[in-house]
Amino acid sequence: MLASGTGSLFKALVQSQDSLGVDIVALIVDAPVPATDIAQASGIPSYLVEVASNRTEWDFQIREILDELQPDLIISAGFMRVLGPQVLAGFEGRIINTHPALLPAFPGAHAVRDALAAGVQETGATVHYVDAGVDTGPVIAQTVVSIDPDDDEESLHERIKSAERVMIIDVVRDILTGKVRYDNGRVVTS
Ligand code: GRF
Image 1 (cartoon, rainbow, N blue to C red):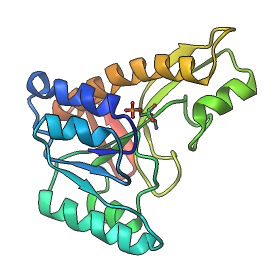
Image 2: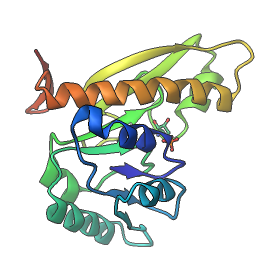
Image 3: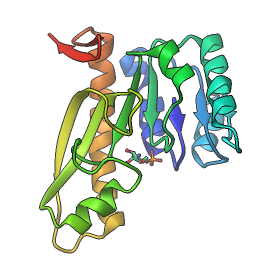
């Protein structure tokens, strides 16, 4: 898994390993973040790969870790970086991301703030396969979250994250059972 934040989505997946029948083999983070503590408490190895000044090197480093681990699925859960070409080339169709908006609306790092600023009445969350763009890959699932008049960024994001925690687990289950699969840049459901 990939994370950059508090890791509440990562934690939800850690707690669902048995019911999903999966093993989370590692956590990769791009900074010293609280998600690492969750990994440590759960006995999951974590790798800190900081971008520093060289994105190409960063991309190669992550690719090297993934080549060694050979995960069936890579889950970006609050990972605030665009993955590089090495990682994408090696793992196309095996990387999913969860995003706190109804894509294609409000891509990027400030999706919750942008939805509030736009004055929309509902937003939500999206799980999608990752491609080279910023939150542009094929959409697997979405959940709508309504915006309350007194919402601020924090309260709204917490409600969206509650929805994300449920949806990411459902999507992982659907991928494992073959209900959802990736085929040449498209999502196929059966
Ligand atoms: C989620 O809303 C994710 O979509 C976004 O960052 C949040 C991660 O939250 N990109 P957490 O660190 O798992 O609590």
